[in-house]
Amino acid sequence: MNKSYCPIDTFINVVKGKRKGTIILHLFQGDKRYGALSKLLPDISERMLTKQLRELEKDGLIHRTIYAEVPPRVEYSLTPLGREIHPFLKGMFKAGILLEKSITTA
Image 1: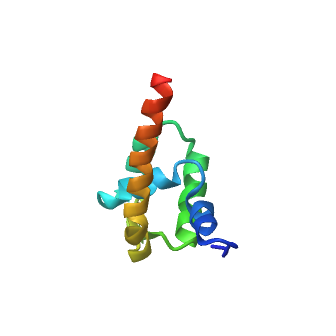
Image 2: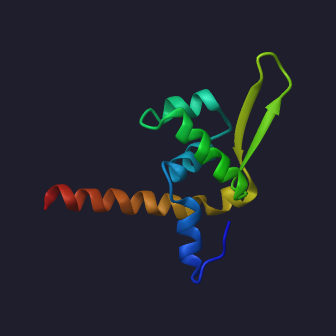
Image 3: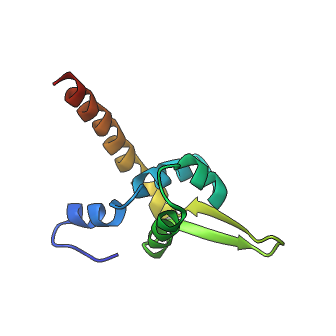
């Protein structure tokens, strides 16, 4: 996570990306395995989902737990920081709905 000139830019730089905000919103509902996230995000490739998950982990928003089983099981969960930014993402979600309504009526 790189600090920007403005804290708003820092926030946007961390959550921008293919479905990062959506991943956080899904993980707020509970821990998810990779396969479950993949099914919740059918419009994203496995390569891109893996990339976004790694970036979110690197930025400290999600935690990856690997269980020593055969086959290996991996679960993703929100860190305390990820939980803390959830309300802001939820607000962005609601704002997006308002904007979509104005686009379809224009």
